[in-house]
Length: 238
Ligand code: APR
Image (cartoon, rainbow, N blue to C red; front, side, top):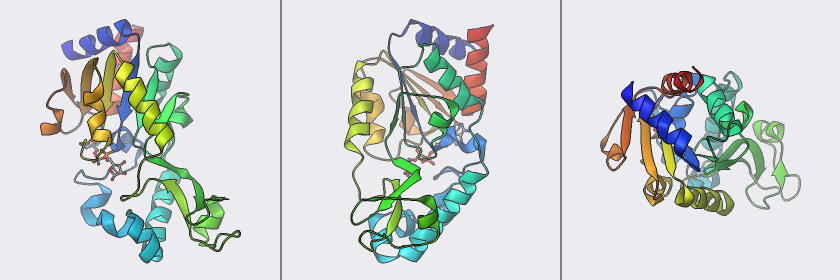
């Protein structure tokens, strides 16, 4: 409880707070994360489905994997934790949401100032000519009407660099931040795992599993995102 009060005090006194989220932010919505015991990468080698070479050399498997992720997403919705972060932005307590998640749930919950560091699974393009494509065309495995290229979701694949605008937006916000709260990520993936240490502000790590990646944070809270955010919000509103 004391820790939650500390986070709330820091949140209310901070002039610029950035929230950095990962897949653990959406597991309570029913979307698996990647590296937990029930994560996607437990049974699937990411190199075979989520690497640029998978799209180029094994499109059927790539397509099957992302079609499966899209159908999982269709049956899920943002949870209270997502809505609390949107409310905190409206209250001026949160400046920027930087996320590794491609589910679009922060935007769906009402956040405005979002940096999608690994892109979005909710929109699509041709891998060759970059022209926009529809979800239906991707799911129907259609070729690009413009150049005949392969269609893909706008997610960042392993072997690809992050979208420059989102990266700079997150980096600048974190550099200027007085408080950075990291929620639901293993911090295993570069370069996002470097971001928390690029701030001169205070840092908080909220995660279900605490590993050595929690080293260096000013405050570490072991627990589930929705639960922790709900309890902090109760302190804020009561
Ligand atoms: N609340 C808090 N933390 C949680 C919860 C929860 N409800 N559920 C899971 N977690 C934690 C897990 O303990 C794990 O440490 O969230 C973390 C999720 O870590 P990963 O599965 O590695 O996901 P993430 O860090 O977002 O992965 C980064 O890797 O596979 C790529 O592109 C993909 O964006 C992804 C990137």
